[in-house]
Image (tube, rainbow, N blue to C red; front, side, top):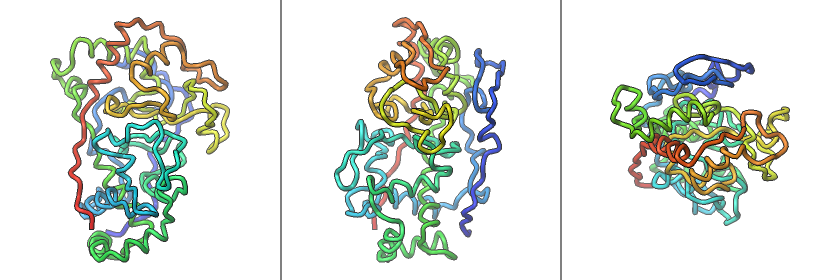
Length: 338
């Protein structure tokens, strides 16, 4: 199979209108045209060329993901910051680059990116293939120009063989490295949490507290206005009142609502991915909910959806129970590195 660089765009990627839908969510859904809360469907993933990648791509990408050769000084792999044992994060407020410098944004998790349409906190990558190469080439992160990575991999006989098997017409190049990494990342799928079992008919899969939390999530707490769809994200950008100096999406697109706005993170396995927010400034889920409960901080450009909620302690506890019901860890057996 020959890799095609042209990527498919979801037809509903940016509708640019407000949608007011009456459905079982119990509250208007505002923003992109996402479905109600549901289980991700592995049969509905948009792949390059419309075909799922062969297993040779996935295994090659998995090996690359864990190989520290992908950094200039051979000290960091993708899994250094996206550690499967730490919710595909690293548990730090800010990660460190290959040269030891502190990065400026918190490492996001990788769960269910197969269903995403835009990537990274500021949305500067439009595909998993673009996203996969971004930290490798970044001077602040892994600091390895992709042309140099190609040369490094060509020096390893096992990689030459693996690329020949996976991409017989192309070998090792920028596009095939990106394709392999993205193929593996699309397999990081969390689809069988207690919530998924509950909406599929197993009414005992969630506790009474979690069920109350679900109703709050859809209603009084207004969470679903941004955290909707199968992965609990609208793939949009919002200024939620953090108030640091990072302009976020504004650096990519100077729109009226972009200043201080960041991509809505998906909430699957959110209990595993502390700390939270683009700057890692909020240490616990309870603190996150208290932040929203007070209506965020009064900063310039605060999203109009962020309002004081009036939640009491029991309601916050119930919401935390519901967020816990989104937990379905992904186990990855680490490969042997050539």
